[in-house]
Length: 157
Image (cartoon, rainbow, N blue to C red; front, top):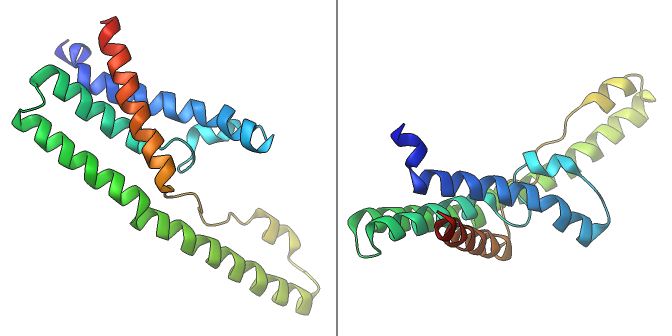
């Protein structure tokens, strides 16, 4: 039952769900494209990873003090995750875009040569995941989401 009273854990989980769900209307406003699948995907605005780790750090700071060792651990963890979201994971997504372009060009070439004898197989192919990482602005707003949501939840409880 102690798990149910773990405020940092629940703040982080709430931040993940909130950030994932809010991606849908934000994307709709930006592109007029309604895509409920965004709630289950990586990447996009705001970063749910950043929201989760900043919510965790904020909640730990509220509960244990912002000068505690456990807050220092949470803060460093937050910095690493947010840096990774804009660094390695973002570059992986950029590479996936280029690989998808190359793969499409190659398959078009092969298809033209064979007159697309296997067109159904090509259509069933699943493209590489391109939305793995985040732009810095997405990470910033994910972090802001985590902090504000945690402060709000703490004031309710």
